[in-house]
Length: 324
Image (cartoon, helix red, strand yellow):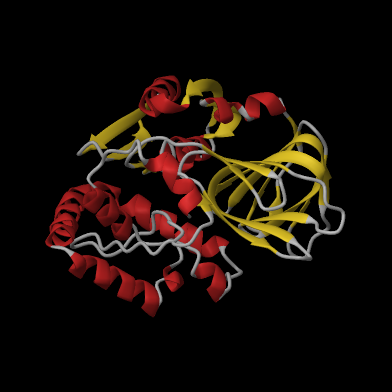
């Protein structure tokens, strides 16, 4: 994780409040909160009076967010339905321990924060890293992954966010990216993987990749092709502008008939706070356009105007998205 911390120094938020917010966010997978994670939270809370004060402030802030409760509950239920495979305990120890109890309303599943990710970026930040085999990794905002490299394999697990891989040749060790329930195997290539919860989008820049889901035949993608999978189902194979889909590497976000739910998840990684859709029927509305990653709120306003959506901002932290 140390390699990814240098790029976080530009964030000027009070560290205690930032940590409190992260602890406040309950993992989508509550099974991840084992005894070690609970003990870590208790130790952080008792470490300094500023931590306890930050925790009280965050609890008070979220009491104002009751209008979002139905949407949050639905998101939690949907995430639970989509999972049929549980990661190993070792994987969980590489995930975030985030704990959120919304005062008077119970816990809601909003996100995850890997505890021991090998590489990660902060909200609104991007990072480039060299991997042990000479491959090059680029991470988009609020992204995290862990590595499993040894003499016989090169394995990467994408916990959240977006990553671009330029893979170094090594015929003896396949390069495989695990994302949600699928795996992406490089066939001498560079490619992009984006994960929004259980939904994963793979875009090939050069050569080929093979995408596999449990119990299904792998699909091979060529340069300029894109595939989305969700749960245990493949989506349609699309021909896209691979260069435009990598625009995030230069600080731009490109959407081409992208479902609104995915767009909001992307914007969430480039702004502080949360964007919550209170009407799930809006999730499939298509969005097309180029936006500046560092102007996520402007992008959100523009999309709302075009799609006739209503935005409700609460305490400059939570944005509710509804039909106008």
